[in-house]
Image 1 (cartoon, rainbow, N blue to C red):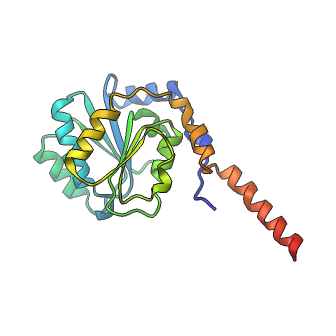
Image 2: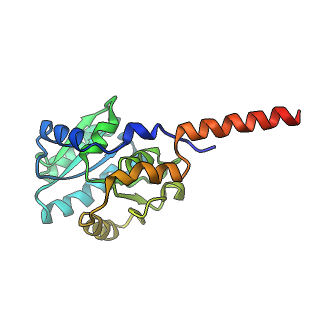
Amino acid sequence: MKNAIEVERFRFDEARREALRHELGLDGALVLGTAGRFAYSKNYDFLLDVFAGFYRKNPRARLLLLGDGELREDLERQIRENRLEDAVLLLGWRTNMEAYFQAMDLFLLPSRFEGLGIAAVEAVASGLPCIVSDQVPKDVVFSPNTRQVPLVLSDWENALAELSQVHIDRHEGVKLTQAAGYDVREQAKELARSYMEGMGEA
């Protein structure tokens, strides 16, 4: 059984996207983002290094960090040292993560290690192109707009340069996620069928 999600929650909605981007002061910005605990496994120090280089070449870029954790102060220090205070938004935990996926243009998951990477599945459902590390299970690489990249700074910079220029139809995200078997409704049906078959054999 797959670790499925409510894919309809993440269906792309242009009106929601524009409203939240305006609320956050992101009109006209190229918005990168990620979601997860501020912990060693998530490798956000590497992410900030990647973003710092990208931002120097793309001053309209912004980075959304959704989450919190024990490394928050370290990340805040790194943001200050790289003079990224105006470009990085630390938004904390949100109950409506799906809304923030709408506001993004590209999702990043640079984990040092990862059980599945469910946030990447949610990002694909919302139609986002994704860059994930080669330490994330290959199960999340089911979209033609997802790149799995080694944790090498230049490789991430190249992937960012490529995917930031790609135009995709974000409405395809739900279909891709359903086709990969991550729709919780379909997984529930499959579980029910398994139970029924098991009862018939008993």
